[in-house]
Length: 417
Image 1 (tube, one colour):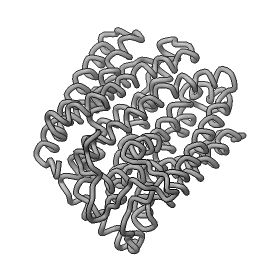
Image 2 (tube, one colour):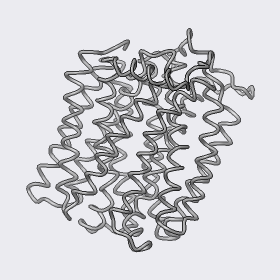
Image 3 (tube, one colour):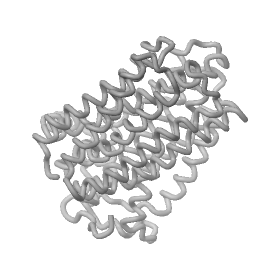
Image 4 (cartoon, one colour):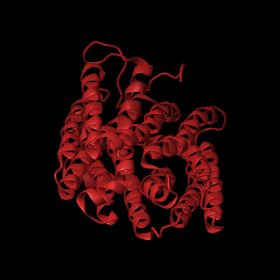
């Protein structure tokens, strides 16, 4: 991303000097944003290997265990409608620090949970802190960079995210074998605490002018209504939601399919998950190159095409009763590759038209993405029939939806790309 200057002008400030006097610069800011975004996959992926065992540990059905994931996503989505305007009202830095502090406390509560009910409640609180961090991270990018440059920054940040997401399930599998689910949440809390320290030291305030009316209910309602009237916002958000929906379907259902159906040992689940996340990492690298060549809208079309084609092959194999680990993982690798191209562009494009309401737009984008994710996660849990078929069909539908929106929505309303 060298050579792309930070955005200057209304609603933005020079981000090269932090409050502490330590200059993070463009690269430092990109790394920080990448670390902020990693909290979401760390919060979901690191304990995936523990999901099947939680049923026996707490003597509850799989559908109840699934609530530790689905309600996390529900809390993550709903809170974004508040955390975005909070960041517009009070500034990025204080809201970010508050979100990180809550995240650490809630993660420790998850580790100490004596019952499944307490675990679910603590996960909901953890989601509030996590979503605040992610929303503010997206708003920081909108403050500092123009749309196409912001997409490249988010692609770089997503590469960092992918690296953590690849390592997370592997570490989680080892922690599950050695310490059970509590070890995973202690590890998550430690990561959050370390990031809190780094952020307190290095993060500058990127919002130049705070909106003192951002949290007024009437203002919030009309502000969100105005954002929802933007066809540009709707097109990019729909593409991002469809693409992320497929990713969350795999997150939600992969441990049950791989461990219980295909016989993968719990200790090896992380390696399987890391393989498909490597596809996401490759996609974020390809995204940066495609953006320079074909621009934001057509980059999303390319990613949607790859995701749709890959997932359709996976569904066809499952329907043909080719129930093998490779038949699930290789097509999913392709889907994650496509998602790595689509999602950074969708995040940047959705907020591109809202200089004064970047926090609110980022929050609404995230809320709608999470709403679709919760619905799909609930469907995956309810449709599980002891085969890979429901999961692979869901992935195919998500990929085809992302491609359709890219072709007929994003290309029609490309925005300021």
